[in-house]
Length: 251
Image (cartoon, rainbow, N blue to C red; front, side, top):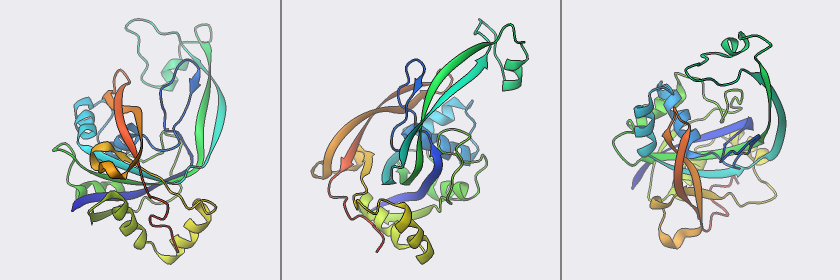
């Protein structure tokens, strides 16, 4: 039996960034490990500047995500004025950037992708000593020190995360147990919000947590934080579970 902490992640708009080149800022259709690590770290009060604590948390956190509703893709054409980068010049706030004056500011353009109306169920577990006890993480998600968001600070959550501790032999069984605790009113809401026309709710998980005969597909994602200061990420192998068509679907 493995101990899992399971919670809901749903937002009107969310961004789960993947590799970004040039002006285009794409997003995955589901949460990345770096985003979940950041959310848990923020709930625990770990700041971005505490790089060693961030990296230890990332190495010690197992992850699985069930896509209850991927939402739909939306692109924002974004413009911003920023000062040119110079050696040994740093800006702590947006106000500091704008204070350099109009003559120095330049306009940058970008296309940013979002997932609109996405609903996900997230499972985490401990793979090392860097993750605090799951009961402590659960308490932090219930009363986070820093406000949780879905990828970008402007992307507030639209439903409570409702974290729950579950003991189960397999990841999909843990999700089923979590679903069974939903109040009737929540199940009614989920019936409207989840993928009603398609009962498949795929589960993606760290490869080490899934038996080989349960693997339907293997994917590589560059979403493991290596350096928050340099914004550098390493590859992670993720698998899609077989036979997830009916896991926990509300009756």
